[in-house]
Length: 314
Length: 307
Image (cartoon, rainbow over all chains, first blue to last red; front, side):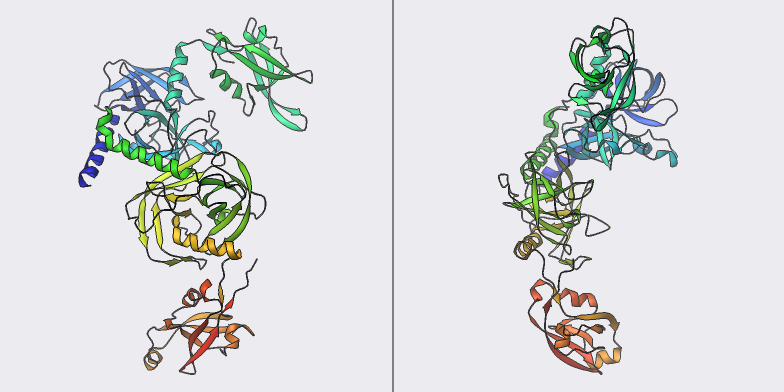
């Protein structure tokens, strides 16, 4: 019994040490200290989009080296940013599949909360599936040193409801750091808290964020504005088409200005971001079913998603 | 990082997830209040136990079963004093909880709190047994057989859900409604006792004396003269006409100093003697009247339930 508990505590120390080597301090835009996770040994570091500002970030490694890197990719909706530093053989974290988590399994976090470097916390997976109360989540801001500034960020409406939810204690400064499984393999990037519950971006979402950077972006070619439309007795959110890019996917499918889009895929729009979100989960060449209102009549249009190399999304 | 270097952690992690999976089949979600759902346990076939303070309406209660079905439930009974409520279900084709042994649970043992959120998913938090202790009385006068205090976070909606040990056995029901300072667990024995009474009568019987009381301190001289063990008592400031005390001959100003040989220091001690088992019993109530001890035999009545 004594031996067992000794090895358990030693094992925790071992996993903590290994995870700490893969966790960095991130400073960007004078906003205080956040955390980052070394994703690949060639200098790719993942953090939250809300931790970085501008085009570059200063990264301090566990061994004390301070490097400056460029922010090579960002997705504020998914709250992810990728920093590239000029270094090789960095102690990258082992990344695990975040799709097969079980409620109750152990999770470990490392970050720089409240100015403490490399703080280690333990907890368990609280729930799998979508966040049930997405309106009450708050950002974990970078740690700022003072007191007033270190309150949690304002309540955010979560744009993507899929998060790893964990019963683990996180504080300002933990944002961008790793959430790992019992083997020390990273399953998420810590990002928000909701009622004390930690919300981390799943590692699989990080991987697809990275893949999307190289692949052509899905593109429809419409400029829209949110409007409220009456549908029977209900009032729902619609996206009024203001302009259609010539030669784009939307143009080819016959979408015209003054059409009001109300549904993409299976769901009616609930926030103005929903079209962008649905689109970002698709690839060029996929077929997107759109529902719209044209001259007071409902209509369905299947549209072959195009790609944008020159223009912005949606 | 190779797998064998964290064998014990991985084993612990798998054990915890297994325990959640095993116990989770009997954890349900309950919609009986505005906005926030609560949780409950399938205690016996067709019988759901939850925390009473999360039941805000007595009709149109629906529950979410582990297999995602939503079915209606009826309120079979509730006891605010122990913060327990019992619901009845017609659907019984899902597992009942495996009940664990609270006595073998030690301070420091790992425990899990479970719940089911309004979007149907099973939720968990973990911690350790923080304290165990003797029987205690809630602020509403209910008797809890033993103190069981977990050190963990009950997230919103987990109220009324079970506390389980690492083998997935239920050792109690968690509630934030019995203490302002911390969440407590109502142990299995208390739940079984209250559930039996609620299923039988729909409420918990309380003894009735028919006396309005205030605590008083007795002068030392009197205490020595009468050879009393304690220096306090409960003075009768109101006697309900034709109530049990009135019929036994209790007078205004009598100071109750013992009931069935249990010393009475405070009005609280009187209430403690009036549990459900006291109803209909003849009790020996010793009072000080005019400087001397007088014994009265009171037949305890049943307190009428106030809606």
